[in-house]
Length: 432
Image (cartoon, rainbow, N blue to C red):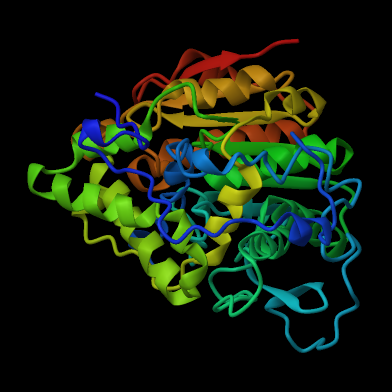
């Protein structure tokens, strides 16, 4: 069964345009034109939940006739950015835990390990990592992992609370330029410069894997290696692989379905967007995260996992605006030149075809399907593989990064043949 967001006959959530303002043409003429068409393991497990809302959001902007605000290539040209790609000089050298990426935007960051630097891009949107994911601890003797809170969430700058004035379209433009995809991708380039690196080695999870992919497509010469863990199914909207709202709805306990439908109708009331606050939106995004957590199969919803209270609010809606109601970013993946590993959990709620789309689109990319960990009582490897299969998760990433450092971006024979003490690891390669 599929939920059609624009049809009340399905019994699923409907898009509500109550309160939607008409756009005054004279107002839009004043705007800059944009291109058309163009601390605990249990908290870690939530990173990347809300991205699935994006994947099921085909009806979210359907009635607004919007093209995406973001198109690949815009950031490199510094189009539709509110600040330059070159980060400002640090004004407070004593703040070792912040990166100044714009004059009024600071990103909270922390690191662990020693050796070759690796930047970790969290998912959500808006759920930062607070501790090192299980499985990566064995790699800290040779890699230094840098974590940061994306703008608009965690301890990083949140530039908006409420939009008190301005027309609907003007608010959309300001929100998207400040917290949308272009701004998040530009921050990756600014971080590279702050770290004084010629190239970044990146690990991205879920929506963070999507951001890393778009950065690598815009700045192919600035990425040395990339690991995409359970990447988000938003390369194409509407998503062709599945209706994730329907998947979640069918996996929820029966006594939660009506509540879910009612909440989704409120959540998708786009006309009410600018009447809400950062705190209100963050609370709604946490609620979405809890529904998806309940629907996962990796035990996350039953081990005491808590949704963190510092997730993003406006930044999530900004991501929706950036992507619009329809886009296809797959052609941009052909620009990527970095060795790339795509990891997918065999029991991920997100269809395997989503990860395959990344692996098939990126030249030379390699895909590994992590199988259930036999030591966990048959528990499957899902959307959060560091929680459900930390040993294989860390080993697979370590082998890949080590091979890149050695100039041999191929899997080791051990991984190609499978491990005798565990379930076999499925692997496919997009050779070009």
